[in-house]
Amino acid sequence: MAGPRPIVLSGPSGAGKSTLLKKLLKEYDGVFGFSISHTTRKPRQGEEDGKDYYYVSRETMQAGIANGEFIESAEFSGNMYGTSKAAVQDVQAKNLICILDIDMQGVMNIKKTDLKPIYITILPPSLEALEKRLRDRKTESEESLQKRLDAARVDMELSKQPDIFDVSIVNDDLENAYRQLKDALIAEITKVQNAKKS
Ligand SMILES: Nc1nc2c(ncn2[C@@H]2O[C@H](COP(=O)(O)OP(=O)(O)O)[C@@H](O)[C@H]2O)c(=O)[nH]1
Ligand SMILES: Nc1ncnc2c1ncn2[C@@H]1O[C@H](COP(=O)(O)OP(=O)(O)O)[C@@H](O)[C@H]1O
Image (cartoon, rainbow, N blue to C red; front, side, top):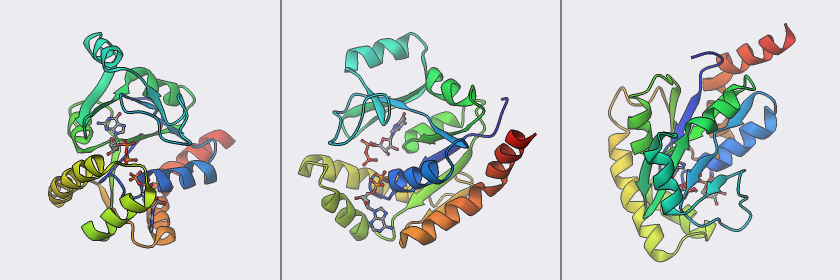
């Protein structure tokens, strides 16, 4: 695969992936590019189609998958999510480090491809803290919240297995977690910055 190595960020819903990602994209504008996934879930307040996700119907998504347009796709908490080939190519064509924010099923499926990313998991300090963050975020119905917590229990157990993730970061203090994320990525960041200079 040409260009810098992609980054996969995974971890339970509510662990702080989007928060950390936004900080990274802001600080390193022109270094990272976000792989914009497709989803059948409805946009939240403040989210934009074509920026946070491509919001599509289940029919459209299923047709795209049947047509071979997706690298991976998964059902999460009652909705479909997937990474299209175009989403990754759009970022790689600009020679940016492509970041994928995907769930554990996505991680397992990406492992079967030739993408060869760096796998990073973002974990909450505890399930209790995770629940509090999800409740305070006020984006989920009680049903959706419980589905996310159920998935989190399973994924946090799975994450303990060696060999799934290259880097594991507990997002307790945000600045501390962000520093650990940058440390994990510094080699790739430097490569892109040097390539720009030459
Ligand atoms: N497999 C897969 N998972 C995705 C994709 N896009 C997002 N996800 C995951 O879907 C889950 C739910 O995402 P979202 O509805 O945005 O909720 P949030 O994580 O609570 O902000 C998260 O674990 C994401 O990492 C994708 O393209 N593929
Ligand atoms: N270190 C932290 N301490 C406290 N709250 C946090 C921390 N990191 C993120 N949050 C908050 O927790 C909620 C979930 O974070 P978010 O980035 O949406 O998670 P994810 O993308 O993994 O679902 C958000 O409201 C966010 O502001």
